[in-house]
Amino acid sequence: MFTAPVIEAVFAPDSVQSAGNTKAIEIGNNTLVSVRVLDYHAAAPIPLEIVKPTIKDALQRAAAAEMARTRVRRAWPSFRNHPATMASMHHAGSAETTSAIAAGGGDFDHAAGTGPPAGFCRGPGGRR
Image 1 (spheres, rainbow, N blue to C red):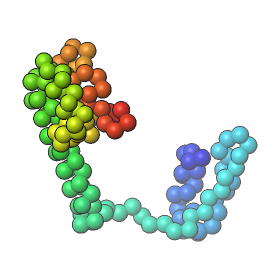
Image 2: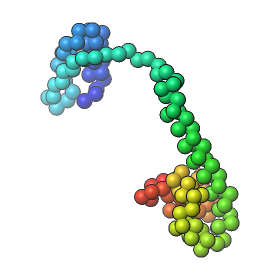
Image 3: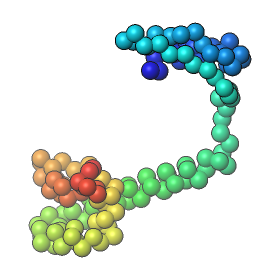
């Protein structure tokens, strides 16, 4: 529906200024659409004070994910030869393991055997 001709018609100066309907625009399959711009505000930068909490949260999440990946990478060699310990930690839901799972694990090469077995670092519902 948002084809190039429709977008051009929406942002055309006469559409923005007149608040009237655009000409009928064919969008395919004998379907026509007309658009009316009721309210228009030019693009403007968002003040830092408004976006600061969102940016801070994103940076904290990224740092936490990296920390979790680092902890898993450091801990992996000691668990590699002790599958029972690894399984008990995984099922116990320790903070380190839970953080690592939620963060997506790490950049391990499962095929080469340099990281946790497939599925170990999956997030909720088995997603990565």
